[in-house]
Image (cartoon, rainbow, N blue to C red):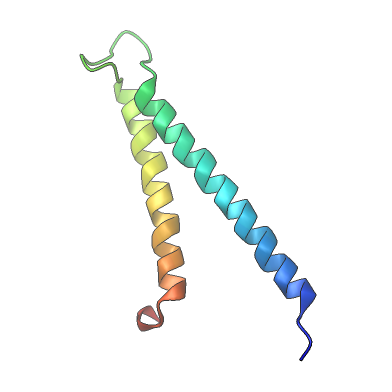
Length: 77
C-alpha cells in the first residue's frame, strides 16, 4: 500500500487555507461588533454598518461549517 502524497498534500493545503480564511472572516466579524463607526452608533457602541459586517461574516463562517458537516455526514448525500 502506497499513499498518494500529492492528494495528501492537496488536502492539507486546502485545510490550512480554509482554516485561515474562516479565522480571518470571524475576526472581521468580531471587529465589526467591537468598533463603532460614524456618528450613528447605537447606545451599546455598535453601528449599523458594523452590525451588518458582523452578521455577514458570522453567516459566512456558519455556511463553511455547515458545508463541512455536509461533507462528513453520509446521510446528507
